[in-house]
Image (cartoon, rainbow, N blue to C red):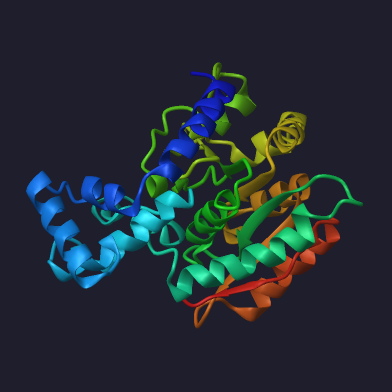
Length: 295
């Protein structure tokens, strides 16, 4: 199925999902029997409460099941309780009503205003970068991409960390082919993968880890690819290698046009972070702000 056909099929399926009652979604999620549903309905009528409240009172569901059902009705991507262990780092999908997820949405609002809603400037992608390994940029980029997709726009997350790629692990997808193959002229076909758990979210993994990552992104092919992808997606987020490993992050950010530096509380060194911001400024890349990661 092509991306266009998939989008049409998704659009046709949405009204049917929204028309389903909370009770029907809870019953399906919890695999309730006809007898259990009848008991819930009887309790609901007798106590004059909602189906979800009745199901919780009888022990057939919990508060999380009700939130999941509401999310389904409003077409809001939200992982069910049984699926959260598969992608534990995706806080914005697994725990969208938590304080941590709310912080991702707060950053999303700033990114929207400073990068993606700038109608006077050229279209830009956003590179998420850090000075050191372990600062949490892969975790942050993945969750920021999820929150952007939750707005309803087509969102692409590119794993450009060709020194230590991890986005395919975060989302649980194959990494047999991807960005490295495109830049080396060795890959054909559709390499962008749709994330089924989040409608509108797509991932371009690294593929085979190359021996010459910096040379690949310095070729004109990378800049051309970025321009093409920015024209096809509403939002493009790019994960990058740590700056301590080489110049990749600064080069990638310059091709994106905008960068969001990440530092880790209690671990990142201020001098290295300042050097990174200076390098971005010298490369005429818009620094949209900075994030201090406490997690």
